[in-house]
Image (cartoon, rainbow, N blue to C red; front, side, top):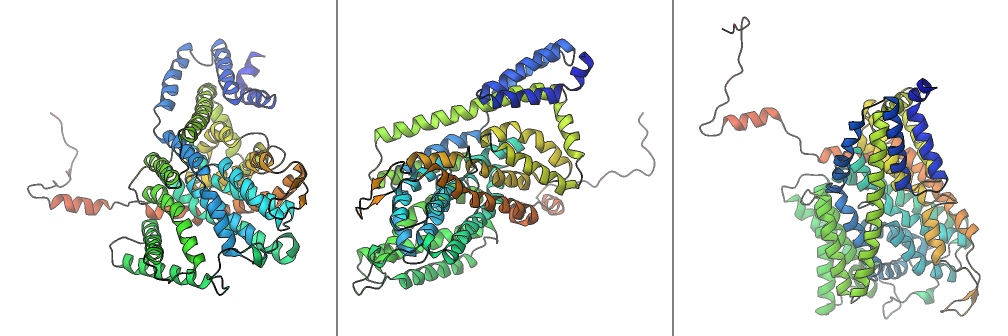
Amino acid sequence: MTELLIHYMAPIMFGSLVVFLLLGYPVAFSLAANGLFFGLVGIELGLFRPDFLQALPERVYGVMSNDTLLAIPFFTFMGLILERSGMAEDLLDTIGQLFGTIRGGLAYAVVFVGALLAATTGVVAASVISMGLIALPIMLRYGYDRRVATGVIAASGTLAQIIPPSLVLIVMADQLGRSVGDMYEGAFIPGLVLSALYAGYVFLIAMLKPGAAPGLPADALTYKEPDGRRGVLSLLVVVMISGTAAYLYMRTTNVPAGSDFVVLTMSLGVAIAFAIAVANRFVRLNLLSVLAEQVIFVMVPPLALIFLVLGTIFIGVATPTEGGAMGAVGAMLLAIAKRRLSVDLTRQAAQSTAKLSAFVLFILIGARVFSLTFYGVDGHRWVEELLLGLPGGQMGFLVFVNIFVFFLAFFLDFFEIAFIVIPLLAPAAERIGIDLIWFGVILAVNMQTSFMHPPFGFALFYLRSVAPRDFYIDRVTGKRMPPVTTGEIYWGAVPFVVIQCIMVALVIAFPAMVLHYKGAQVKTDPAKVEEQFRNLPGIGVPPPLQFDTPPVIK
């Protein structure tokens, strides 16, 4: 019996953890309790010596001294401040007016604003709750199908999982031992492609079932010219002029093609458009339509914040932690500009940030205790042998892992999956030659489903908390509106879970979407370094020693 227990200690330990989690015990304490209990059992059975556990304080201190994890409270605080700054309301109102009478216009606006909020807040709860409070009543007012409306809002809110500065990507990079900047750059294109797939689904619904996603009626459009025109052409002209001017100027600089060039070109284009809008308003040039001016003034703050955070990270000016700190300061400045910042708001944001940070830290400490014992009983070798024995090589490994993580996401939060499962999968992935940034982005897209699929999707719970539960009177039309049922929210999420699974397959099939990050890395040519070293005044590199016969040491 003892030999059997020693041989199967790792799977017994992992199975016990799963049982504890299914029974509903807190994750952090389940991890730590399992680690300590099986550590004592392992000592009693002679698997390792008692002083093996003396490494535990050092591992806990390693968590506390991890600078990368400082980005989590910074980005969380930034998202919570922005949630209350009124930026989401302005964006949804203006972008909804921009898409106007197009079928599915409000749904397109929700996807677009969801992507922008994801790139500024990085927090799913903030995005889903903001859009649920603002967009859902408007979509229901104008006759949107309840499943389409709730599904679009929940799915667009979860874009904060994959579009930088996502908290998931920070944790993923930390657990995989890779750069957060590389993880951000690798996830950027998949995030945009996923947003486009959401918009494509809205387009199909609008074409096949026009009544499920109608356009706004003409009397709902408030930004019009005196002659009744909408003024969209004026906006297109400004975008083309500012974009072309920025591109032509950047061509005269020495900035190489790549993420640096794109970020700086976009930032310069936004600055030019903003300068035109300011001149038009205060000098009264009357060059821009009311809609064009409003769109520019509403879009500039989030785009400026995106450059402040992601732009500085991508071009290498700031680390993710420094970028998060600048983003938090920028969010407070935006709230001050909108006269929304108060002591009470700051205190609430700080308290919520402290709670989430403590939650993450306790889970990570519990995971460190668990992994110490798990590695001590050779659990990592058991997992590697199990995974490396799968048929199909890299593709078989990726298919199995993604199916496994997809079903785990029904019951576990993304933090729990990242801290428990990823450290077990990463060594096997690296051993069979899978790029860990690519692997991390694939799993990040997969874990996005943990927010969406019934019955435990957190995004669905967030939306349920703000969606009307009872009959209510619409404040604009005065009509008595029926409530949104939980079943409608769940069924609305299903098509978007399918789209997320398709996105996982696309990232696996087209790894170049992620691996382009390697092109931005600094490459050093040793021959050029040696040549420059030789040319330094007074310094020469001696030729390598060559021996015709082995040297004799006397």
